[in-house]
Length: 399
Image (cartoon, rainbow, N blue to C red):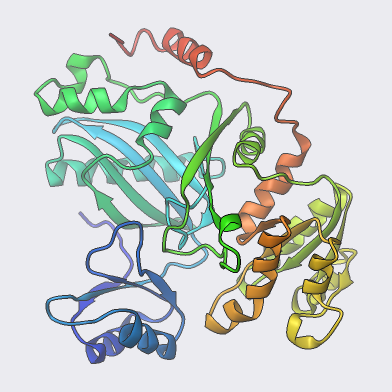
């Protein structure tokens, strides 16, 4: 179909995996040939990490191969759910992930409709979904995940089945996707059911995941390709920021409105960290950062203080957390060594109940949501459903 996908391959030995990795170029996503919830999946950044994974984390044999994919870093991930009757498709929803590609879709927050994707990109995504559904002969529900980097679209995976996002999409749009798909599967076309046009909600719905980290002392809350969440919540608002604020409240994440904000990010995130820092300063936060991030903030003229990493001596950032001086933490990292260096920051944040974000995008969205009080505007799903039915009565026949 001429649809792009990241370079990928199946390997059946350690030697074959190391050889293929050099062809694809690092970083790589590695996973066993059959997984649920991203179990044992990992992003590796060099040959040493890959070799350690292949020898220790899993057994690679001809009967149990390993899948290698080039990791499309610094990209936006997108989920799409559709119903296909074999001839036409109904787009249930296009969900833009808040976290960058590489976070398991079950852990990543997402927005419906997309909050930053251009209409041109959305139209291309829908066209690719339709082409794949018809080529595969899907009759019923289908889900696909894409990575969008600039104007380039990569398909990551295609699932000819219902996905975990179907209940969220159905509530966000008021369209009973499971019922429609079931009728398609017994021979009733979308046209016969009255679904001849896609409906885009006039409001924003945000799905946020709920994590069990507080119940497991010492666990690392860093997010990655292996799913860790145990549930999810939904926020609805007239804007993306309002919906995100409600989602945070539902997930039990209490974003403070002032205090000390600690920012330490990986090199790829540093240019965007300046924007987030400026916004936090404008909202009344004081910024503290480790030396690498602080140097960038100083160059950009953002007021801040410098704090030691754990290995740089005391007092350090963990001391500030233990003394209850830190209100918000935005900490991103990559690579095995960096994970280890920042582990104590994240684990102490969990134990001290400090609001923290391990992706810059989530920290940015949370910062922008501070302008909204989620308790001031309450939206009932029933009211939204009535409004949607009234607005689309000429398009959709509901039984």
